[in-house]
Image (cartoon, rainbow, N blue to C red; front, side, top):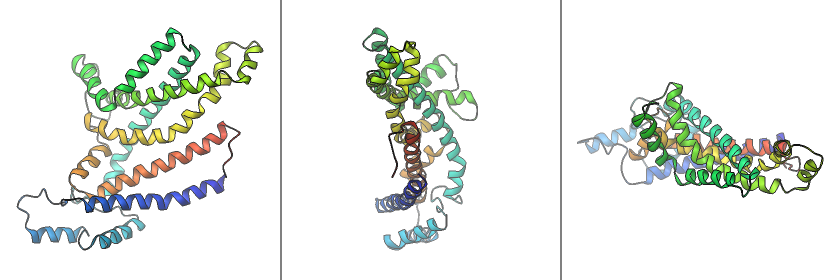
Length: 305
C-alpha cells in the first residue's frame, strides 16, 4: 500500500509541474499584454515592467525563470494586484473556496446517496418516478442558472437569506445549495443504477431469506456494494465542485479564489493563473489517490499494485 502511494506521489509531482508550466506558457503566448489595460503606457515603461516581473526575453527564458521560482517555492508576483504575491493571495482566498467546496461536496454526496437509495428501493413505483423527476430537474439546472434563481427567490423575493457575502453561516446556504444540488442529482442517478443491481445479487437474496427487515437488507448489505461507484466518482466530483465554485463565487460575491482566477484570465496575469492551476491540479491528483486508497478498504476484492 505505502509503495503504491509513494509511486503515485512521485508521478503526481512532475505532472503538476508540467500542467502549471503549460498554463503559464499558454497565457504568455496568448495575444495581449499583462499591462495592456494601462492607459497611455509608454513602450519603454512597459518594457521596464516586463523586466521587473521577469516576463521579458524569449518564451523559453521566461519559462526557465518561472521554473526556478517554482523549485524554490515561489509562485511569483501578481501583475494585476501590484505589490502582492500569488502565494499570499492564495493563502487568504483558498480556505474560503475550500470551505465552500467541502460543504457542497458533502451535500452532493449525501443528497445523491439518499435519493438514489430511495429511488432504487421503490424501483418502478411512484416514489421512484417522483424522485427521478426532481433529479432530472437538478441536472437540467446548472449551478450558474440555479444560483441566481435561488438568490432571486430566497434573498430578494422572500428575504429569508442574505444575497451575497461570506463570514456567517447564513451566507453559505445559497451558494452551497447552488453548487451541491446539480452534482447531487448526478450522484443520485449513479447510486440508483448501482443499488438496483446490488439488490439483485445473491447475497442480498440470502439476507432476505434469513428474515431480515428490508431496510436492514438495503442499508447493511446492498448499500456497501451500491455505494462503490459513487466512491470512485467522488474524486473527480471534488475537482468539478472546486472548479465550479469559481462561477458561484462570482455570483454570490464570495472572497475566494474564483474572482481572482477569472480576473487574472482577462488581465493576462500569468503568475496568478498558474498558481490557481497548481492548486486545482494538485487537489485533483490528491483526491483521486484518496479515492483509490478508500476503495481498497470498502471493496476487499481490490488490490493496489
